[in-house]
Length: 112
Image (cartoon, rainbow, N blue to C red):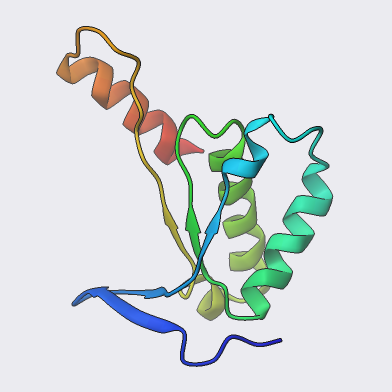
């Protein structure tokens, strides 16, 4: 199955797939994840038109998977990598929040 006419504009310069791939499943509550198999499946989803990924820093290795997925996609086809979006969230623990705490976690997500 190929997803057709599935792109919408979330903003003027942000086209995304109407159906997001949720990465919460890799957070650990659903058993062991084989990283190579997960990455292979992510590439297949992308080929079928599912190009937008929903993740968060608390979804276990999700951000690392997206980072590796995007590296592989970029290596295979730079134009295809431009079609892929990863939308992540910072979910802090309750308690005092400072600018340096926020910057630390955001920079860590960006590196992944």
